[in-house]
Image (cartoon, rainbow, N blue to C red; front, side, top):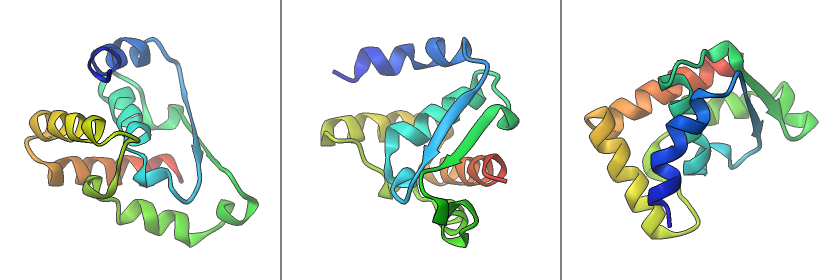
Length: 115
């Protein structure tokens, strides 16, 4: 059931002083992860309150991580259940007046947060 956690996400994240992003090769393909960061910023969080931690030493200074973020496309991100993916994408589409606008917003956020 995704409905209740999705509705409560802004409440949970608005009470956070910071967010820890454990970033690996698949980070930009995990829809819940990118949604959480976006909601955190939309509820008043600042980009400098996102702690960006690469999961492997190779990623720490890697251009591949930056490339993945710069080329982020929400249409390539998924949840475990297809029904959750569909619901989140529908919510994003309605909230951002289109998936491409969300992509632009998140690319900027992810790039700034990882610097």
